[in-house]
Amino acid sequence: MRWDRFFDDLEGQLASEWEAERAALDTEAERLRLSRVSLQERLGGLVGRDGSPSTPSLDLSDGTTMRGAVTGVGADCVALSPLEGPAGAVVVPFAAIMGIGMPHQDVLRSARPGPARSALADRLTFGFVLRDLVRRRAGIAVHLATGRALHGTIDRAGADHLDLALHDPGAPRRADAVTGHRIVPLAAISWVRVEGTTSLL
Image 1 (cartoon, rainbow, N blue to C red):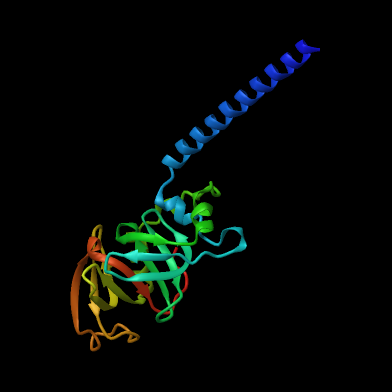
Image 2 (cartoon, one colour; image 1 turned 180 degrees about the vertical axis):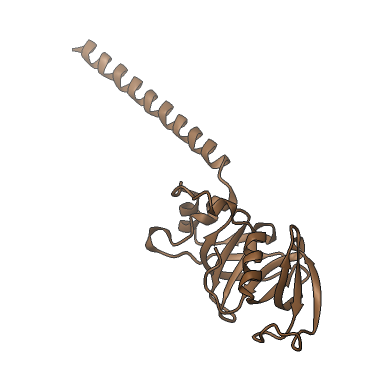
């Protein structure tokens, strides 16, 4: 009888040690997985997943805190549908994000593995979005890291800058409405609001 209990205890100890070792390996594997997760993947985890939209608040380089639903994620930027301010979509380059606030459940949700991204989404850069806005001739507000906002239409978007024709918000880009021109380095842009559209990425 005593030997049976001894072997039962020994078997229980081995099983317990095996479970502890497996849990440690699982924990280490999860740490390794998380060490490879990018900001792009975290934000992608907030795009209308699980049927409950997330509305994080982004602290931006110009001092703005913007709260909105994440509608798309590109290679180096995120598109939002802001909850406040004029109607329109917003695109923010990752480099302008100083911090992201959200409820704890969204922090955890964004860290979970998400669905595979399309190869196209990984090629949609901030510059690509700006070149699309040139094609659309959309009225925009470019918010600079200095806190200044420029209103107008993008005439051209280069590799690392854009040419902006300045005019009043809501006005079409006509020669007689243009009040000036600016070349704006992309690195100086904190965020861009696009008038009258809800989809950017």
